[in-house]
Length: 619
Image 1: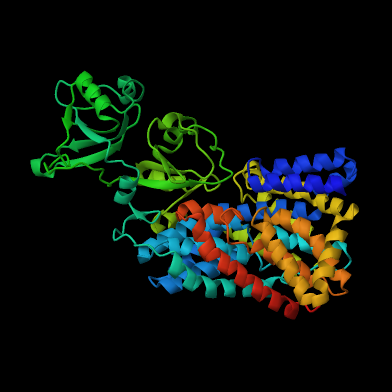
Image 2: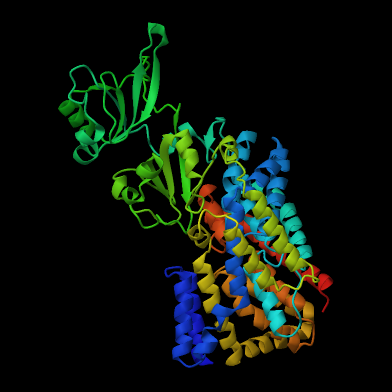
């Protein structure tokens, strides 16, 4: 018992610290249990053959196919059109649509899908997107309570009940609980977001990630070190390419773009065209180079290349004072990296945005810090927000890499250009068939079999470009974490720790009745989820809740529902669930924003569930 407790405490400490990947911590704890003899190798590895683990893998594949065929984006964007410019209507639709999607696919994927659409809708309606992004994250977790497959904790408690001989839950056993969670969320969040998440909104209607393009330029200091240089007749730069002048290495300057006056036959029909500066762009006489860097380097470049420094001109055709970037064909946008992005820990140069997407990286926002110089060698971290510059079609093309990043504030018109792929109806039919096999008892197919069939059919019918794309949709960190932690609950039971904890809780709270014990289970789970993942919390608490109910001789169903709801409805911290963390940087929330909005919601949810669960699932 002592060895198991030590392993559990050390593992929990590492989970809380976050300095080591959670799947590595879980595997190390599993190895420790094997080496110490608490578990046999067969017992320790049993988690990797568990039905729930296989179901989770299949559900990742099915959800990935729904995203990649464009079906989910089309449905959500069309429904959100109904909101118009009404803030209350948009808030309600965001909550309801997100909850509905979250009932069938992962909450992280739901937020990644909905985030750019919601931001664009908010901007079009003139609403501050901060008021909607946190409810978006919370609604994705609430939606997970709607169905058996909505979130891993639901699968865990179903497996626990079935293993204890109480029978399996049906696909929609969770729906009443999920609907109540969503109703409580709407009623509580509507006033809280107005009180605590209101900031002055921008008057500029052309926005990116809730900010105007000029606000973004100001935020990243694009104009403070921006210089315009003209290639005059006789300049050494004329006829040379950007790479031949070696601007970046020799002068440590970044050529953002080139403005070129195209002359028509009539002198009044001259137009200025924008060109993104590429390595092979040839400089012509009259070109104006938009260069970013320090003044000393600019002066050296101007002197060496015999260029004209334009520091008192606003545009290439006028002579008003000031200098700034204008946004015509070329624009800027922020992209938020996903936790699973392959470019994490690569340098900006290695990531190859220029070569792959024809866009420049102008800056990196890391929490409250901005990295603006020597970007080529800057290492990209998980959760960074990158400011990119390029032609609008190229920026829109970035959104297709939805497993790598989310393009913040993408115009809704651009989002709708991702047309419904011809495979989307196939994906819809497969998903509906999977749900039917899981819902109707007269279809003699086990839930895990139904999910495996659906996942395989998604691959065989071409809902993925290739098999590798299907594998990429699986979050292997979550799978390994869950499979490695499942035997921990077996170790707790085998060594008597679960029995000891449940007897202590039953002895202390059981004398006050099952309602008090249910409250103890709920808030213990809720507290643990603030520090470690909801999957790990559910694995540890499910057997304890089961034994607590059995100790006082009542049905364990409501107790296990208390565990899954408490584990999933954790809103007081940005780090308790992936959706909370994903919208933190997009909405520029502080930790205290989650405390002000999420903690009251979490407490209210607990009070309501303790009162409601015994009515839905009597003791």
